[in-house]
Amino acid sequence: MNLRETKKAETRAAILQAAKTLFEDKGFDDTRVREIGVAARVSEQTVFNYFPSKDALLTQLAVDWYRGSAEWLEGQLRAMRQQPDLDRFLSSLATALNWAQGERALLRLAVPRTQHIYAAPSEHRTKQDQVFLEQFEANQRCLREIFRVLQRAGAIDPGADPAFIAECYGSLFQGALLHWALRPVSSGEALGDRVVRALRIFLDGLRPYEAGTKRTRSTTTSSRGRSFAPQRP
Figure 1 (cartoon, rainbow, N blue to C red):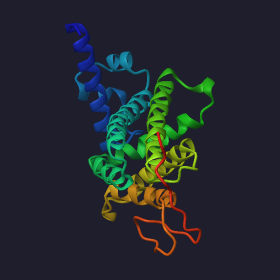
Figure 2 (cartoon, rainbow, N blue to C red; figure 1 turned 180 degrees about the horizontal axis):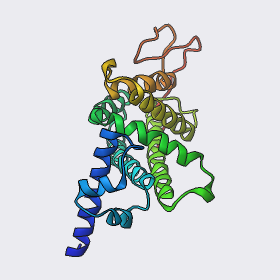
Figure 3 (cartoon, one colour; figure 1 turned 135 degrees about the vertical axis):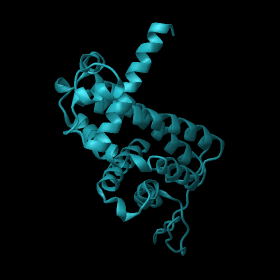
């Protein structure tokens, strides 16, 4: 990267950081592009040169958040291939999400924005919206592979469609994120704990179990008494 490209990358990062801070402090509607420029030490026109609208700034912040999620998921996939363990996956997720504890205001804005992108007709989506959807699909592919690995290890039901598991996981994940973001700070529950609590209710239903065992937070039982054997590669 040459000096000019480095400067452009630094300016872009400064604009995004200024927008993130102002959106969190003042709210999306009450933040003006001019204020973002002042905070980033650039002109209002420079902000528009990088991002055509405030919506574009918010979408990019969501893309960056999901890109960070992708890096985490890829690390988890490597770990699952070494040692498939659903409990360890969920524990790692809770730890990772608790890092985002201070981003409640941003998540309150970004999660509905991503839902709007999903629902928008393709002809109304911007190029940046498409970038977000591609990143989201990359995350889903990684999740599908994680669940396939867990199925082959006998950790979850091998008869369930991994694509559908990933889809349900994604819906629960988004819903739990938004519900946490909308709750008052005084509620005290950590982001990771709330999201994982919701996901565990769903994923525990896919675990192997033995007849006669009791239902607990980490195991699930049924009168059918199934158990899943590890599958051969």
